[in-house]
Length: 319
Ligand SMILES: [Mg+2]
Image (cartoon, rainbow, N blue to C red; front, side):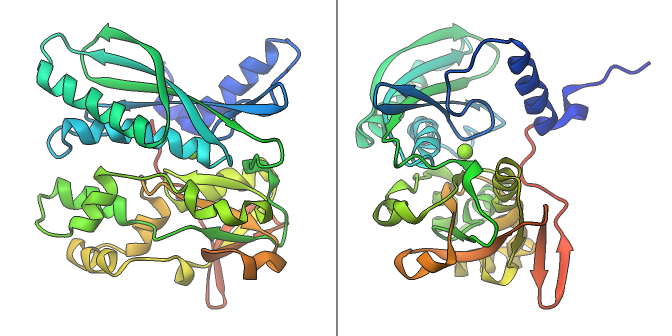
């Protein structure tokens, strides 16, 4: 008999199994949100504390072939910041755990750490500790702690039927940038830079966060994030492919790569824009791009003209 692997279970299957196991633990929950959102949300005094952790692994999440040590370090902080700002919060403290092969060049190690420090400084994050361990490949595992006022917290679970689904900026650039780097294609600096030097998008929603119902950052493609929101809010969605904002650079690169630019936007990763839902009445007061609508009917559909087809592929799958 063949042994079932984690690959066969799939990322979502594993998360569901973990959530059930944690629930069976039987302790009374003090958290407001546990497993299943960008961050855990726990009450501390009058404020809410946001907790998130993300590991970047050499060869899986980055490659030393095209990322400089500093870029790797900066990205490790920024992707965690993105999860905190996606909950309406601000980051405060970081723990940095590094697993390093003993033969790893010291200069590169220092470069990575300098990147971590400079990104942390730019985001007003204090590095308060961490861990060093030896291992077969380089892994940068950062835990970030942030805060958010109770009124400002935005979860995946608050989307309402009829809400418009919006995004803060162009999608797909980073995924196309990565493919161009992999194929050693010259040019397309803005797309490559979006992949190598991502910036979290919290500032883009600051002025109108009070109108936002559900929110999440886009790390694994719009389709996957829309599915998270729908699952957690127990709703469905229709996405309008023609309204997804695509940059001219992405369109040009897609022609060269012989791919549909929309596939980068829907199923690519590393955009770190935000996707959020608002009641349609708030639209005049909100900045961004409408890319779909929340429906009562479950499932995610792509609407094109009169045809609505169910969306089966769901973004980056970690296993
Ligand atoms: Mg996230």
